[in-house]
Image (cartoon, rainbow, N blue to C red; front, top):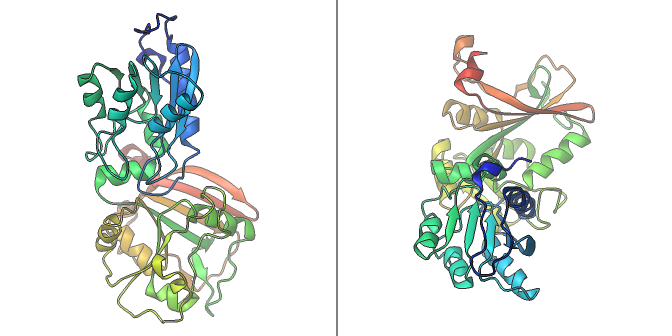
Length: 367
């Protein structure tokens, strides 16, 4: 069981006098809360959060945060318990993130829990967002017992892009490449469809359905006229309707008939070559996760600026020997100066391979 049972006290309910809540029960409840959290969308400004409400050994309510503007997981769990005829006074809340203490699109969860009369709250991690943190302090001030950081590593792994964005002030950046073994994204005559196979392309669309924005350069728009949509709508990992923002960076005008303009409310043209300016503009729109798809000059700009947090590399088992390289010149003069990432996942997708790599730690860089 991944939850840390030692983090949980053995509590006896103050109001009902029922049997103690043992650590194993609380660990199972936290496991269920994490499962509920995964039902929420993997994109958007808010984190995925799950909540389980306990009355002794009984699960009396369950909640999932469904996205910005919808009830938070704690409020949904309270409503679920009430709808099922359970009283919430004296109950125990097990939730994957510290209940919020601010009023945004919805009211503060900490106040809702106090109003519901809960006795105990266990949260997997403190909220790293300074705008929303403080729920634990509020709960304690109103007589609620609180355990924090019951499983912080799993809480962070549940929402990597959101966590990155609220702690760094900029969106998480994933660079996607699709190239031959020798690193070419087009042949000498400019042909590029298709270097990767249908399985790899389907996977790439699943990734698009989980991000908030896709960034390309003006050169890619002129060369490929991409739509940059997640197809089909509702691909695995999406919510059935989500489409990412379609962002073009660069100074050249975008043709009025370009397919990327297909949905005007999703189209953004940022007239800059500076990746930091692009990320700052998208952060103002509460974008948490950016997928950079090229071309080579744009990828190089993000790498040179040290703004690449994750790599998705689709590799086709073919050689071209000449043609367009996957990335423009980085100015790396010697191997020791090459930027490095650490491989965390490798998968076969039809005839192609896919690997996911993250920023390498100092130890990983030295291996």
